[in-house]
Image (tube, rainbow, N blue to C red):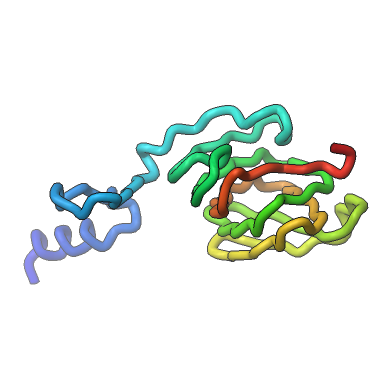
Length: 152
């Protein structure tokens, strides 16, 4: 194997290699999103300050399937809340903690790290927090998606 083949192989297998859109003609309805193209925005005021959101698919405010990502700061605290439908969550980066119940308790929560997945059932009170590390999570569900706090 010469040096060119070695370098080419290392480049192709590198985790830093960027995905490319090499196939221009794809079936109608195909959706492809690359990390460098994700448009982050400040999340609405009902989510903790410093949280960013990027909608990848659909519209969480309308009826139908949606996929979004949330980027949370470290030491984030999302109070006890629930959703009208199941919430499917995949941890993309960092770590996040989830607890169930009517009272927020930072001492009680399951830790999920990058690559983990969990499902919050509909209409079940839960809370979410981060500690020393921020997190990026991907949420998929059926809209309209709502974060309903017990006082609402």
